[in-house]
Length: 177
Image 1 (cartoon, rainbow, N blue to C red):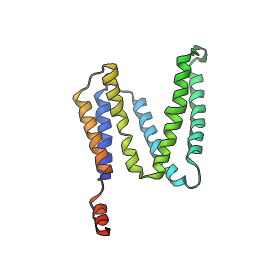
Image 2: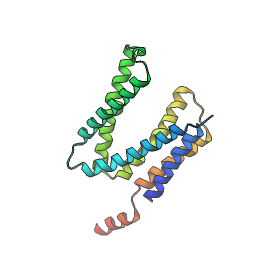
Image 3: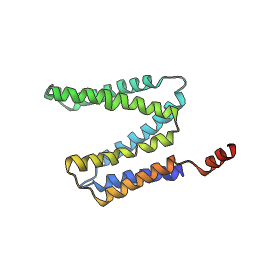
Image 4: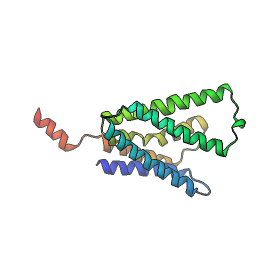
């Protein structure tokens, strides 16, 4: 049931994503998304395997440093750094993104991955696009379409299937009592 749940969650995200696609689709963008998703999945497995040897915060710190150098180097090569307006809103967003949106969220995610089942924790990441759509609908007056409703329903069903107790475990617990 977990595999079915993960597939339904993936389909739910696909339905939500494809519902908002208009115009040309970027092959480069789709390719980068697939590479990123594969890298994320591999990193979860790596963190799970090395959690007894390396503290999760070190993994997050090294990941942030390496990624920061790569992204900063790429940005400097493509964009003109003198165009950045160093004001309070920019610095506030940069600080929030660096500390909370990246470092703290990743540290919490890896901590949850180490203490629980990967599939159960991963299932809740399917909620990110659904929550983004809800925020866009309520605060930005974006349209809420039928495809968004179908995607959200698939995601919720996915989370239920992945996290529901299996009949075998329930039966074993009842016999033990």
